[in-house]
Length: 118
Image (cartoon, rainbow, N blue to C red):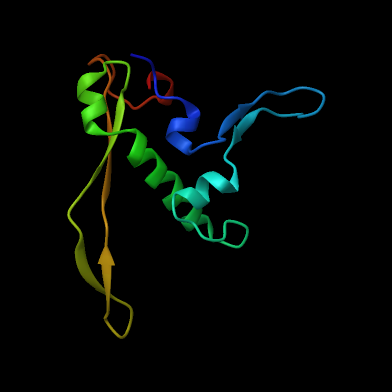
C-alpha cells in the first residue's frame, strides 16, 4: 500500500506549495474547507488551538490503528484515550479532558524522534 497523502491526513484540498516566482517560499497549505469538514465552524476567526484540534481530528480519521496494522507504509496512528474530568481555576470549574495519543513507529535504530523518519 502507499503512504497516506497530505490530503488524507490534513483534509481535502490540503497540499504542499512549491517555492517559485509566484510563491517565494514552500510550505503546507490547509484550506479552511478542510478545517470546516473536521468541525471548525469559523476558521477565519477561530483560535490557533481550534485549528490544531481540526487538524488532529482529520489525522485521527486518516491515521487509524487498523490502517497501521495492515500497512507497513503507515508509520503513525492516532488513537482516542479515555476522557476524564478535572477541576480548574479559582472556582474549581469542571472541565472534560479528551485525550488523543499519537503513536510513532520506526525501525529500532534511533533513540530520538526525527520527523524525517515518518
